[in-house]
Length: 105
Image 1 (tube, one colour):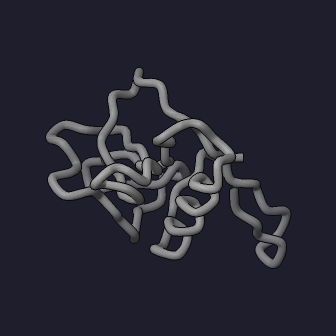
Image 2: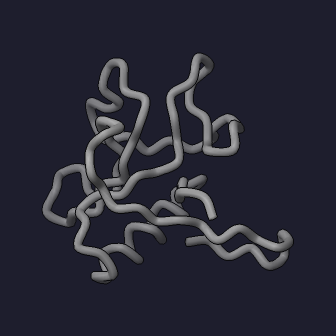
């Protein structure tokens, strides 16, 4: 699988809900979006069509990002810049065998 990257508000909300149900102790998880010369790209190199950065984000020069799943945080459910060597949780998407069998996370 690939590191999860929400491609819509619904997917972002689903990931936050899943992680808020206590399946992880982590208060943030890596997402598969990166800064590129043209904007932001997904792990597969395609252009990101959905962005959900917290207010004041992304930080200047940021290239790696996390999804904040801390319900006590002002940026709960939003994306933030993170140092690539920082420790955060990881959630992977299941690689579909075909599009009709597409399950995520």
